[in-house]
Length: 235
Ligand SMILES: Nc1ncnc2c1ncn2[C@@H]1O[C@H](COP(=O)(O)OP(=O)(O)O)[C@@H](O)[C@H]1O
Ligand SMILES: Nc1ccn([C@@H]2O[C@H](COP(=O)(O)OP(=O)(O)O)[C@@H](O)[C@H]2O)c(=O)n1
Image (tube, rainbow, N blue to C red; front, side):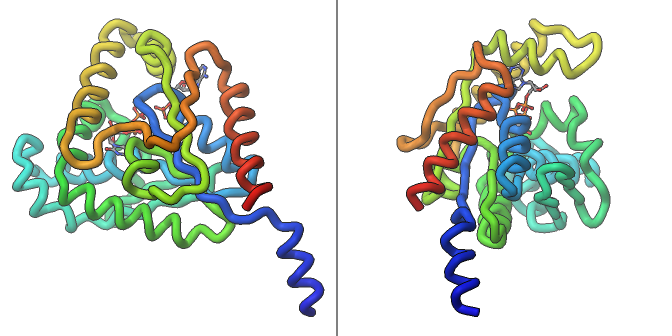
C-alpha cells in the first residue's frame, strides 16, 4: 500500500497555484481557462465575482455612487463560483448570473463597486477559500491576485497588450461595436482599477510580464503552460 502512495507522490505533478493578472482584453480569461484545462487545474474568474456583486447591487436598487451604501449591502448576496475550466459557472443567491454580469450596464459600474474596501475584503476571502480547496491546483485570474489575494502563488503572470489590440479584441466580441469607443471605455476602466486605494490593478514584483500584443492566443497559452511546467518540475 505504501509503495502505491509513494509512487503516486513521485509521478503526480505537485498542485500549483497560478496567478494571472492584467487589464481588460489582455487575454486573461481565454489563457487561464485553456491552461487550466490542459493541465487538469481548477480555474477561477475573479472578475466574474466582482461583476456578480455589481449585478446584485444594481438589481437591488443600491446607489452605485454611494460607497457607504455598497459597503453595508456587500455581505448580503451569496456568490458561488464553479471552477471547472471547461464549464465555469457563477450564481448569485442560487441564480445563474453568467449572462447578466456581461451587460454594458454592469461593465460600466463594476469598477465603482470593486473599489469599495468592504467588497474587496469579502470577495478576497472567498477567493482564498476557493484556492485553498483546489486539490489539484488552480489558475486564478484578475487584477490583484499576485499582489494581494495569493501573494505566495507558485507562479505569477502579468499580461499586457496595447490599448489598440485590446480594444480590437473586445469589440470583435460584440457585433457592431465601435472600436474607438471600446478603447476609451477600456482606458477609463483601467484608470479606475489602477488608481483605487485598495489593492489596485498592479504587477507583482515577482510576476513574469508577457506582452500579448503580437502573440496569438495559442502562443500565450503555450508560454504560460511552459512556465507552469517549469515550476512543477522544481516543486
Ligand atoms: N493573444 C491574443 N490574440 C488575439 N486575440 C486574443 C488573444 N488573447 C485573447 N484574445 C481574444 O480577445 C478577447 C478578450 O480576451 P479575454 O481572455 O476575455 O481577456 P481578458 O480576460 O484579459 O479581459 C477574446 O475574444 C479572446 O478570444
Ligand atoms: N481581481 C479582480 C478582478 C476584477 N476586478 C474588477 O472587476 C472588473 C471586471 O473584471 P473582468 O476581469 O471581468 O473584466 P474584463 O477583463 O473581462 O473586461 C474589473 O474592471 C475590476 O474593476 C477587480 O477589481 N479585481
